[in-house]
Length: 276
Image 1 (cartoon, rainbow, N blue to C red):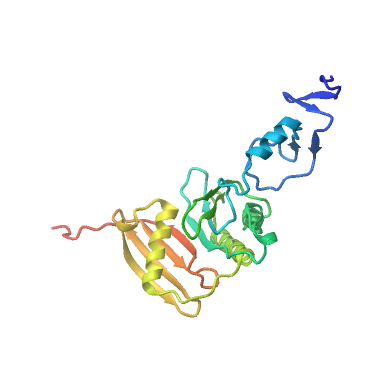
Image 2 (spheres, rainbow, N blue to C red):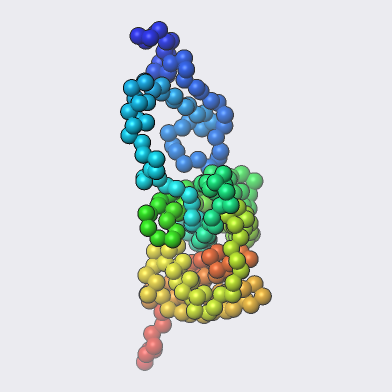
């Protein structure tokens, strides 16, 4: 059918598409964040603007926009593995990474979520030939104050199946550490600095609390081990309910912002008095 201006219009899924509408059949990445697109297809709608709208927008725009997400100053990634969608993750990996200032204006937005997702995608194939089921969320936020104002949070939960073996766990560990290393290369390798005992324990408490929703003050130090050659620490924390979390700080090149948290079986709570 034709509209009042003589343009041909076609009905498509409840939307009227004119002859200037651009359609693309290019495939979309395996990891995508919207459920509104049909797999393998994308429709871009280009709505023409009237001259009066253009004049209004130009007069309303200020030279410097206040509401903007800006550049990414910090990237935080959390990757967890679980036996089934209803289970708690048995291990999680966390990366807290600052993004240095760009060298030029052209590189000011060089790091974005598309790069991060492309880097994480091989994690889905860890320990198997076919991609595993997953859930994914991404959150971009910015504040108008503070040193690190623009942040990108990405959370990925991978379902490995009820028959998760030690080999699958090891493959998952290797795939995540490689992905984290690649993300550090993209964002800019942080300067390696020695991690003190107090800093490692503080980081372990914080990341265990983040990964499993535990009160950090409710966890006591159960054991610790320093790996000086790798600049990493293994810290075991125990809750009052007997849950044990093994935390390794510095899993990627000794960088303290790269952490693995593993939830272990509960400790048996024994009666200190004993039986008579």
